[in-house]
Image 1 (cartoon, helix red, strand yellow):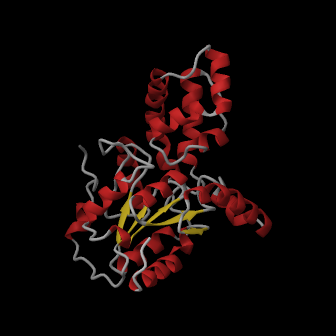
Image 2 (cartoon, helix red, strand yellow):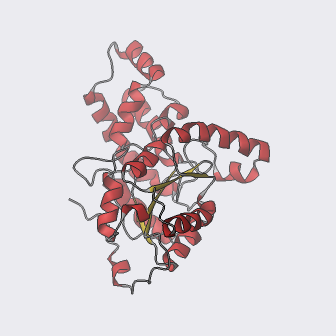
Length: 288
């Protein structure tokens, strides 16, 4: 099994910062949360993989629906969407089979490996937010719907932009798989040496990622505008008028609320105030 800390041994040799916070760890998703504003790297590649392998068209909106799942499960979930399932049956005369999912997944992986670095730029103030958390002695975990083969490319690319979490868990690192189950989040807890899951925060732009945090017993923070549900590029976000942003926010909120996150914010730039609030709640005995 791959090393979930992903050769981040250099962090382990540094002198640990004495924690100043009741929050022990924040566990981040990757695309749409820390890097890749709008979560375009995985969604566009799903569209390309379906087209390349089977000459079958899916829309970007359809590719976004199951975002947050492991990529094999994501392909399966796309194939089970009513609109996609109907078109697939009309084209092939049968429902999508596991062997079809396998072939699309095998096509997806090299495409994603080739293009994931094209979307590695950190979101807004993400690196500063993360580094400020580290200065408070808060450990930084992370997990992703990406498989290890993709993460091994993404991790060093993100490090060149200044993002270096203390732990990384990929969706295929664990026997029982990823979201919405709590396994990846809890593997972070183990690797980071966290004493209580109630002292952890899971930050994600997808409902499976929020479910993951909930199922792990953590505080959960959903991101409305930087991720999958709003589907905005960084430039569109920066150029948007207040009414446009509110419409995108409302659209994302309708989906994210289904997973009952403890907090909903626009982007990671708004996270410090939430961490401070959770810290106060923990000090008064409140738990997720």
